[in-house]
Image (spheres, rainbow, N blue to C red):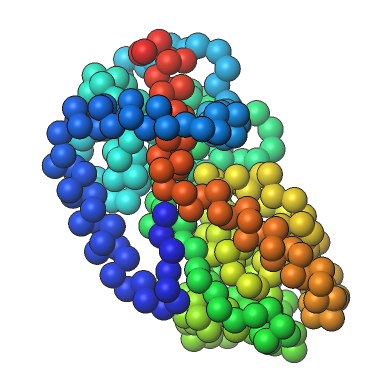
Length: 317
């Protein structure tokens, strides 16, 4: 779990890679012994099992594809990126001869075989998409917000890349809106510059009562830190989910629900600017929700049990 002191996050990736290099050099037998110790410390089994079964919905045994990489072969790969390290962190607890199916990146469709992914569609049969906490250095950021909601600006803020059509539609519609401070921060040559605005630090965005969470290729990556703050997350109903379990979030309980075309955005800004008690209640619910992802030991146990279930249902344990 990464919790930021606002704007002091420049060394986050350096620390992340340093820690993972140490993990890479640590012998596997150390992790297998640690796994047994962690399992002995489980004291909220029903809760942990419910999350394991949410991430890994495989309920029948299946045959593993013989062409898949073993954990040993995976370790030798040179794709030393955040996805690689985030999965390796837990693969090291298991037999090196176990085989694993995985897909890295923003995955928006369901694989044909049970596969480890970062993201999956919320609706439909998504059993083959087994969620793990991947690319967490970017996605799992939480903040220490010291600004009370009442002291923030009565505006909605957002900054981000606008290469995807639904983001472009939003920014085109609200770029000059008096209730909004929104803009794209595109870097690709040839993109529409008329909606361009300067980047904003997290500390600057937290000066606003309302922060937009809008999906990109998959989920809205800023949703986690918004929900850990004293600002309100504004969002249409999500269509994709990650380890954060966006699919279980309750509209107008954890975040303010917007219509898909954002036609009620101004109305919601005006409403929650004056209905302070309702705003504070949603913020409290959101803060409570994020706490479950900030218990590192618990997150480790759940991650390991998700993989253990994968290896058991594929007849490898």
